[in-house]
Length: 253
Ligand SMILES: Nc1ncnc2c1ncn2[C@@H]1O[C@H](COP(=O)(O)OP(=O)(O)OP(=O)(O)O)[C@@H](O)[C@H]1O
Ligand SMILES: [Mg+2]
Image (cartoon, rainbow, N blue to C red; front, side, top):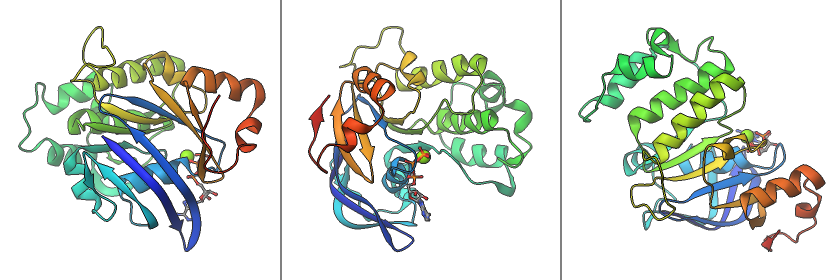
C-alpha cells in the first residue's frame, strides 16, 4: 500500500529526515514511535504531501504509483487521509462547509448531522474550523472529517493526545471501526484499511491490532519490531537502545 525508499527530506532549508525506508502493506496497521522532535509528524506530513516538506532524494510509492512529486489533493483522491497533530485554524470557514464539500457526490449511509452527533460534534458544525476548539475537540473534528472522507490509508498523528479517558474510548473505538468495520477483523481481511499511527503512550494499541512498529530517532528509522515489545522497551529503557543503533540498521528488539 505504502512504500518509502531511502527518503531524505528538508524543512525550512535544513535536512530533517534521512535514509528512511519503510512499508505498510494493504490492511496493515503500523506504529511509529520516537522521541519528541524525532521527525515523526514531519514524516506523516511528507507522505500527505504538505509543501513545506521537500523531498531531496528517495521515493514514496502509494498503491504502486510513485507519488513523490504528487500534489496533496491528488494523494487525498488516491485514498490517503490524515489526522494531524496540530491542524490549522481556518477562520471564516465553517466545519459544515468543509464537510459538505467532502460529502458531495459520495454515497453516505448517514447524513452529516447524524454523523456529527455520533461523535458529539453536531454543535461544532457552525463554528469556524478548529478556531477555539479544545485539544480533544480538534481530535474529534479530525476524526469526523476522516469518517466522511473514508480513505484507504490512515495517517494518525497521536490520536490519543489531549483526549480524556471517557472520550478516548469513543475515539479509539471509532478509529477501530474506520479501519475495520467488523466485529472480528483478521489481519488478512481484504476490507481492512491500512494505517500508520504515531503514539507515545501506546494507548491506541488497546483499540487497534497493530502489526509492526518502527522507531524514528534523529530523523531516521533505527529499529523495527513487534509494537508491544518495542513499547515495553521504550517504557523500561527509554530510547537508548534505539539511539545506539547505527543509522539505517534495523534491529528487531
Ligand atoms: N516547518 C518547520 N520549520 C522548521 N522546523 C520544523 C518544521 N517542521 C518541523 N520542524 C522541526 O523538525 C523537527 C521534527 O519535528 P516533528 O514535528 O516531526 O517532531 P515529532 O517527532 O513529531 O515530535 P513530537 O513527538 O514532539 O510531536 C523538530 O525539531 C521541529 O522543530
Ligand atoms: Mg509530532
